[in-house]
Image (cartoon, rainbow, N blue to C red; front, top):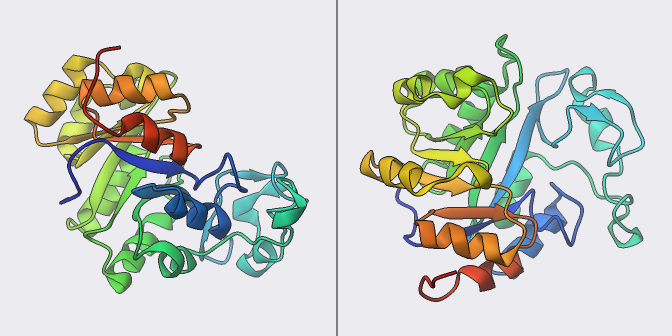
Length: 252
């Protein structure tokens, strides 16, 4: 995982404070605002295709209902996921991973968050691995997940893919312990920013792992993350984050 040094800025679901999340418009805007990369969510449809969307259950950003996994790809693509944010984005579709790569793959690093909440793996991992192979994404992209079993599956299928281990304060206890992460040996740790300490950063760097913080939406937290040596901050305001982490570290 040969990414640039310093504290990189990733746009969370794209520049989601300014455009509808997980849409091409949000990803292109993130690039225009100076982000180094984007984070977005990958799910599997009922007919076994990959699609970019965050919510497991539809209804927040589209006029629909029910689990996304109960919908076929074509029906999901017919939904408007932009109008909820503003009339200027009316007609925006849930993008495919290929569309994201085509739109901004030459300008941005990419963090594919693999959505699989159950120990019973749903098939999204092998499809995403195959996509990485077909698109030769090993240098400019990574896969992260809250599910250690999903990361373990990706690692077994394709060791060349960089992995990020996600967790939060309310994650199950076993996810917050280091044993599973040591077995998978992810290239990056992705804790919620409130969980990051100097010791966590120091120990991760000593193992050769990066530390990526989410979701950072204020300048003071971004600067604190930089001062701790965090390698990437992820948030909804990439322009603000880029300004906050520019220049040398400073005391708070």
